[in-house]
Amino acid sequence: MHRGRHQQAKHFYLITLVLACLLSPLNASAQAEQTNALDEESRRAMQAAIAGSDSFVDRFDAEVWLMSMSGRLKRFVKDPHERMALLQSIHRAATRAELQPAFVLAIIEVESGFNPYAVSRVGAQGLMQVMPFWKHEIGQGQDNLIDAETNLKYGCTILKYYIKRADGHMAEALARYNGSYGSYRYSRKVMAAWENWR
Image 1 (cartoon, one colour):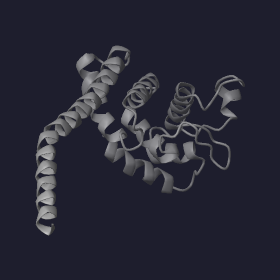
Image 2 (cartoon, helix red, strand yellow):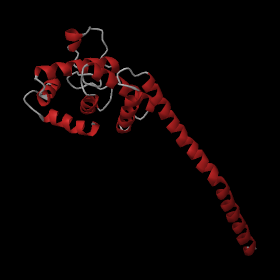
Image 3 (cartoon, rainbow, N blue to C red):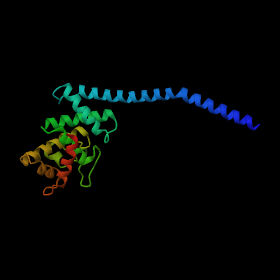
Image 4 (cartoon, rainbow, N blue to C red):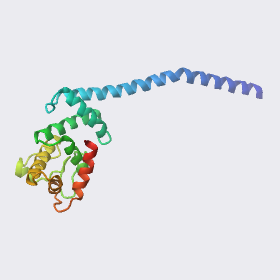
């Protein structure tokens, strides 16, 4: 009786081992398909961003920049389509304001951590943490500062204004942008982040 149970356990073990070997390639194949699907999704997102980009010198310039920045932005924005669309918008807004897109990325990282819905304790809103009073200075009262495109347009315009006012002195311009003029702590944070985006 004991020997019979031992034989049954042995047969069960052998059958389990055979099934594991047979199913193993299927699992590997399924994992490979999933990885390829994710790569395909990223590739489609990249192609859509390149096709819709009007702020790059050419297609190659767009591909190189988007690929490089997408890898760095992934820790903040997981979805590849959302990530590519955001990068495209940031590049366009920065280029129109004659700013370096990498510099704008650094400011967004420090200001909101790429959260378009961020609102500070003093009321600054969106990706670039724009104060609502700017709507009456350079826009319209009904403008939605939580909308990424609108926020980037405002933020880049304001930043350019402060850079001109500071005669190109970036630390001073950043302190003014942040409302911390006289202190360079914020400026140092942005400059350190900028190193990672260049």
